[in-house]
Length: 560
Image (spheres, one colour):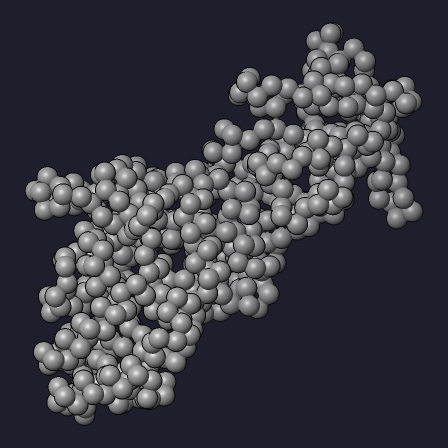
């Protein structure tokens, strides 16, 4: 998606234009939308686009948005998912008020309407197997074939359908189909299934029902019962719209909603297929639905992504009619932009290297002033302890540096953030030759970071005191997939082996370790981090929300 496209779509869009036109023409007095998730999994970033669109339109035009669970398949639905979906919608900043509904609220009325279709000669009970029905439906180039049971009498169909409802037949023995047109160019109109036999306990209706409606049958009628004015779906439902309208025309529904389709969200380095996400969890590729590498709302929340960043991202990508792929870098930009504005700064050393300042008095500790946010004076300052023994980042030292390495090396001088100039005077190595400690000197006259004689240094480095800092586990998360367009059919082959790096011996400011705050903070020069739910007072755990800049694309060879 180009920058021009984003700019054009960031304000109005074709659906909002339709809504405005409907209001202007007085076709509707109140705009009513809905978000209708199936409670068989966790919501993901793609759902966030639909949530923001449906709730956003309702709010902008003074209407309301319903949350309705499409609970028509009890074998796949769980209360856990219902609870998580409600929590996610609220976390994103939206509220349905008293308008919480379930498709199961309408099971009795849907059943009565199905009997009405049978009486009108528009539905019949089919004894064919699922495979036989699939084969007889034909293809895009060949018409379907009528079922041998298509011409059953109304009385026989009613008798069989009522016996299906009573639980007389096993799963798969019979289905109820609409009687439309097996030669239709739209395969969805080739006598679609309305009810299937399913002996399963429903989370809300218990064992009352042995038959359950299909999505295509339940969806439009639920919209009509609730008085939905604009039924907004993703583009794959465009071919289902004629069936949606057919039911509304043939049934005594209380209203006639209209379905509109928009392009679903596709992101680089991301798969949003529910099948893939479920498999990632079941096969142990991730540590659950809320693993911070998952594109689920729960995963993004655990990773510390602010809901305001997701809302801004959805606004920026806009609402289009044609499918496209959005660079995940746009989402990351929105996250960084929001966190840069809201996150306080602290210091952390992820890969510590010990420094001993030889000319600093032993046993002495002083407190230095550090700012909490460079662009927000109201955030105030904090005190950071400074002493003889410190930790710096291992990558900030090289014994034999290349020409343009400006950080610490033997004989060079650098600035420690908020503190002093230091110069490396010695290097201690272990038996294998690895550097394990640096000896340095400091200039007491440079307190606060400036030299009275005006001399300059080319690097400012973060650091932490050895005694007054705490050990912490840091989890560095990268993209879950190594390719911009991972293969959904063989996704395991495209997993990024560097999607998680765990640093067990990082150091963080003591106040960060002791705080119970779940606010995202910026570890200076490192990125944005959030306390993970695995964290304990004795074992702080922080996860990286996002780095300060995009380095992942360069590491895997670019985003092209």
